Length: 254
Image (cartoon, rainbow, N blue to C red; front, side, top):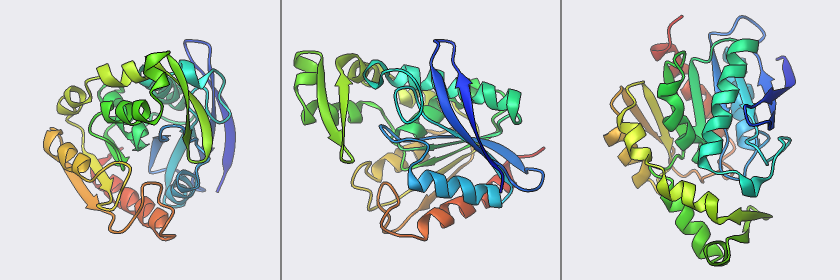
């Protein structure tokens, strides 16, 4: 399975580190994969899902949002709007250097970015989200409670996944102000919703809202017993990739 590294230029000057996982034969479709908040393209679950998708014939471009992983920029200066800009840049680069992206995949907050961007990328025919929230404000609430200094003095540190990240007030405000429900309700593209009832980070009720709000054909698959990062059940990443692959063949046409 061919894999190559790439750099994606953005309109704001940031450079996004990316990896392209390609099938050995001609791809059946091309996908862009957006990672979760403070994660990277190298999260084990994302790597394994992307590689399995490539084995199944799906070319995948996975990238780091600015300020994370190998991408340039300061994470504290980023926000949900810059995530959307980065995702748009990744889709444009994919179209120019791989093939027009027909599928967008997003994990957790990356899933929110995918839902907010899908209608703005004409080539995208379908989206798949994994453990995605139905709003962005809930994350702002979590971060604010984790360190009240973020709101009181404008900046504060929060430990997420064992790593300390500096969070700014403007990042929280971006999450609080974004109307994700409006974007979901305006999306008529097929949507595969993958979520675990055991997810302690993004509750299952978010998946039910996505199922209710979306206007396109929707499929909800419950990942029974899985955690948010798909770490506790080794087979989950393979199952998720296989589910996306099979579903993709029904909804994406070339």
